[in-house]
Amino acid sequence: MTLVPGAALALQTNLWEMTLRSSALNLSVLAILLVFSIFSWAIIFSKWSVFRRARQADARFLRAFRKAADLDAVQVASEQYRPAPLVAVFDFGFEETARQVKARGSVSNKLSLERSLQLGASEELAKLERNMSWLATTASVSPFIGLFGTVLGIIRAFEALSGSGSASLRAVGPGISEALITTAAGLAAAIPAAIAYNQLGHMVREIGARMDDFSLEFLNMTERSYED
Image (cartoon, rainbow, N blue to C red):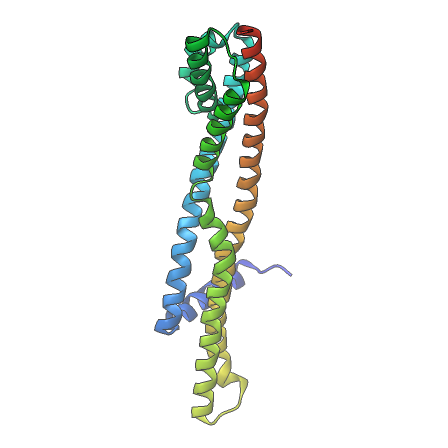
């Protein structure tokens, strides 16, 4: 059943009025949940923008890398693709390659080169995952914070009921309704955070897999360019 516009507006008005009538404790819980929600949405929009730009820059850099004749040509062209995580992985590999070529004239320690590429990938993944733990915390903690406010609100409602001497639903209903607002607020903060954490985590894993594949391509180009 859908709400007509007038009924929806009345529901919003009633929720707002119940919120204003809430106790100081309930308002404190709602304020905490609001902080969690604001930070979560800020992280969601920021990460979504960063990941979108990273994926686009990675795709452009990978095309340039595959067209280049050698690592020196890639190094010159890499500056224009600097936001790409693959560029950071390339920098680690190129520096290790240059050190070995300068010292021995060739890339003789493949294991050291692989470790350098893995280190570059790990550092980039750590940057991409920064602050994402806040989304997981919001998704897991917010419902319990809201439930905490609800339980305390219900306790207050029944205490008021016992003091008034009336056992009617009319006497206890408003207090319970106000208490349940915190549960709804907790779910409203947790659900977007949980969805975003899963979706952004999938994007991080996708970028990580692309960096692993790029490391193999880098090793192939190194073998072609600097044979023993």
